[in-house]
Length: 585
Image (cartoon, rainbow, N blue to C red; front, side, top):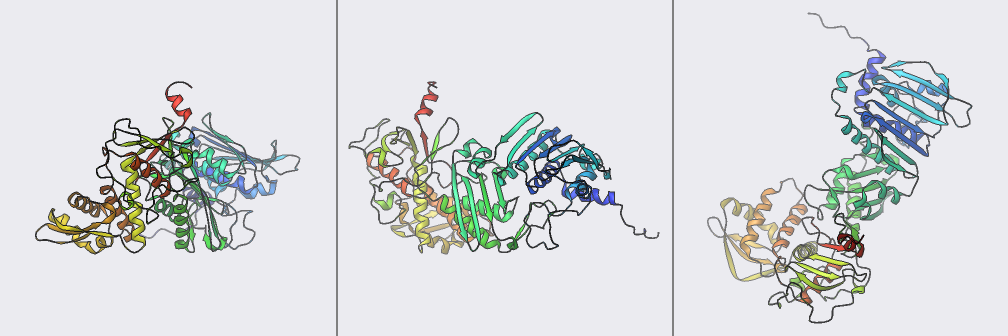
């Protein structure tokens, strides 16, 4: 059997093949059309979808428009007005490949009506399944109106892979939302199947972020700013207590271009690793600017991926900036959703810490607070001495301990503050251990009598294999025959912790860790486990002085709004919240 003759593909077939790379679903077509509008200098963009964008996509803008001769070229492959020279080193526009319109026209029924500013009339052109019609005069406002109908009618195999209209509409909404976040100076309106998803005027970046990231995130925004070696990072992250099940709440923009970049996503995840629960994702809108020659955007036809010339520098800048943004102590009220509770997350506004301790981030044990033998606190205990003026401290003055687990305080504005004593002290202990490790090693406390802990052979092997690492963390162990481990010293910050449950939990933690995990991440996870064992427990009665010390330390400790597992440590109920709960509003 002879080999088939090689032949050139037809232009229509070439365009349909390209369409599969550039336009994989309605959201991709919407993204390309909105990017064209932004590149044309539009100040208002309206997007209307029917059938989730499968049946119809309409994008209208007030941009520069196109003359008849430009309109005829716009639907040809690799025709663009955005590259003024053949170099791809300094791309300053969202689009540049000249593939979007011909790809859409090859897979759908495309019509474009455009009118340049100052022109007497508009011009229109139609493309159906790759067949290009003539340019003809038309009525239309200055700018452009693009309509896409029956997406993938010319490539039915691709259409079969689309999801239902609701799902496709949601993907399209995410795409437009990210573009609207990237260009807050442009008014955006999005309508999906008769429902207005959002209708936003031109606004500030903070206003746009607050409008599009959701009400819970809008009320918990923390600014992020950093600069280094010609790179600049700005934007907002939501407090660690506001998370999502996926990364859909993250909008990352590089030089004005919305991207889904793994370097930035990883840096964002690492920056939040210590303050959110595993499996949850932070909410953020970050804007990264750097010289155009330091980034390659010509990586994929969809233009959402890119390559940094120095990814390590980018990653370091982002992680450091987020760490500084989240590093404040507990103090400023932030709404956290139903039932209109508020979480506390930033640094204190004034006043010195009530506890004098030798280090900046110390737990109860090191601050030498009288935990042992404290007088019993009743369900509604009354301090035996006058509390500090609430106005001087962001978390207010303690007034009671509820269920021997939650500290109740009153802030200066009259708000009710609730603190989970175990979760809060866990964070304080974790930060104290982390600070010691970063300073050279966790201080250990030798046991008067070494303790022998019986484990399973696998647990003992895992711990002994990491004995050197554990010693850096203040835990000194050695083999004691069989599956027994001898404990000679514990981290001093943990106080009189029971070695047996601590070692079993550490063995479980080490079993869950991947060998590829960075050493500092492994050690920090172990510190978090240790902190849990060295913290005051739920059900532990606290004296008034201990409750006050806990609040003051929280105000001075980084990341004190969440425990080491990402759960909130403190909630706040304002007067309005309380009145709403009682039906007074």
